[in-house]
Length: 545
Image (cartoon, rainbow, N blue to C red; front, side):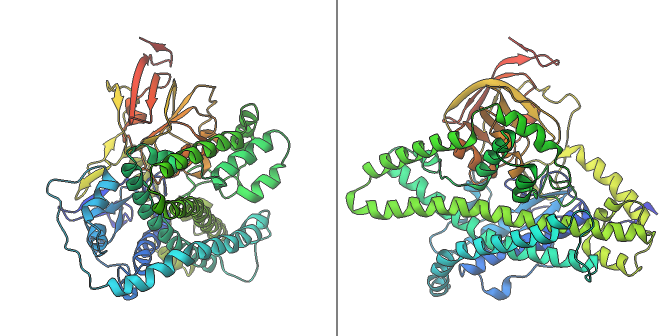
């Protein structure tokens, strides 16, 4: 019966719980399948709790997934992840000198008038004083080592196994479970660095404000240099120029691809066709490394202005802070690459398991496997899952319904999904603001990209408008003169890449892809966090006053 099939990705919530999809949309874009959620669910919860434990905010024994979803830091609604704002605020408030409202303000841009307050405590100060310095000094090295180890495993186990060379002697279901364990381990370290970034960003923002120039904060975090995504964009340019072979490019970056945070996708190692057109387009444009070099100069000039406005006795500490923050930004992107390799290992293992189940006659198609949780796959592996095809059919249809919806950025209890209108860009909105912005100003033609798999040729002067970005978007972003993104904040992938390339951006608009129309002539003001429609395009994509 239809009603007998459970829906692992619909979610559940008490009426008063306050949730937000901010900052999670780009980590796992698109609508998750049950397997996608079973890879992320416990892993992400353990990851952020581990980061709190690493700094001594909570004891290690509390790094467990609560059986009550309302007490967890994140959950899933209609196939999209969301943060439990108050659950996280309560734990964050345990940090001495930290106000939970500051976290909500950084995350949401403002604080609710009826937001609950949580009392701080100095009880764990001795633990914090002992553990925090260790986490600050060691986690970056641990994460980089984990990245290097994961890369070797991905290259030898996943990439080089294409074409029937998969390792023998290990059952596919065991490979899948082990791949999720790799993801948990790496994502936990990544969360520690993500927390370090949040603290460092607050310090840089405070320093810019004390210098009398708050806008300087964005410039100080620009031009970090040697960031993974700009290196990838530059390698794509080199591929288009014939300086790299396709195999060399894929061996370095083949775990990337559209919606890469979801195991239920096809990445470049499986289908390299998208990189061929991107490489050709990139080769005809300015080299990404040149744009990044200019951004580094701008970042260095911003640091000079900050130091000039800083008392002499405080300058050594300020120099140390800036060096530290640049290293954290680089390490954050290294961590993201590492966990994406682990997700690709999950993807590869799942499809191996799907092939096996098709051969045994339990499934009709390899990718049917993604409509089961990993726990259900364990049942399927031993023939103990009843009516597997019925489960696949019902959940596939349900996911298709969810794909026609988007979640509000913030909601209480169960969200009311927003149905995406067929006439996207039909609203009368002419101005938008975001959660984060920077990079100056740009004026140009809006190019609406709602599906990273769609083919789009960005001409000089075009502005990329999209729902979210992940690292696979970096080559396309390198072709744009500015970015307008629905989901994300100052630490999001889109903001990092925009700062590295020195291009204007407004991120976290929530509705840019729905409010703007393909071909609109728009003005992006990263300095003042504003997107304005100058000329509205007709439905054919031609601008008109």
